[in-house]
Image (cartoon, rainbow, N blue to C red; front, side, top):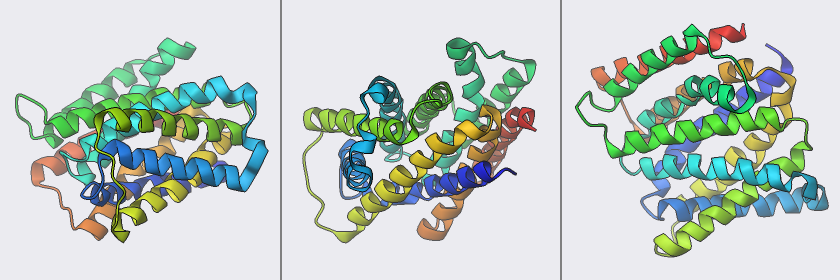
Length: 276
């Protein structure tokens, strides 16, 4: 594995451990307001660390596009976490690996192959099982599936904009996510300031490690590998997510949910085998 891919694996581990941090914090603060705190703090830290280096206007529009995809991705994800487990959320989020080739086909002209359709079918079967195997999908799992679709757009756009300055591109996507989250929270959620240390611990962890560090590493090092090899690395996120949910929250899978998780991972790994 290349050095850049090892670094992306570290970023993936940081993302995986955000699932229990967000899940616990939702007991104290509304979901999108949590995102506002998270990305507001992350924007401030990037300005503090890098000053004017992150304020380049030539990446403002690309950062806006990335910020919009991140807003929808994190918004669907954290609202979905109110209605599903952190483990389910981690595995369903990994569907972005399966969705990425189809988004890439429409946006940057990448070819869709038969394996892509096989991967999608297997992963969707896993989604059906992990969400309860009933005629209707649970709200939390459905929202998390939309989160995966949004993150697929983000991955494709990162690949497309990879030639841009990575620091400013990372900052602008974080900053725009903060703006979108704040506007949404002001109109649709009650404003509150957490008084307990626990939600602030979740906000600080996700802002520093899951946002400033992880997203900056993604934008910086994804350009040094292919989109499919990056997908191979990112597919480890649900493993880290379910491990952290087990260690920190004591979550366990039912037999049906475990089979669904395994099918999702089978679809993901079938998809990223093309990266080898």
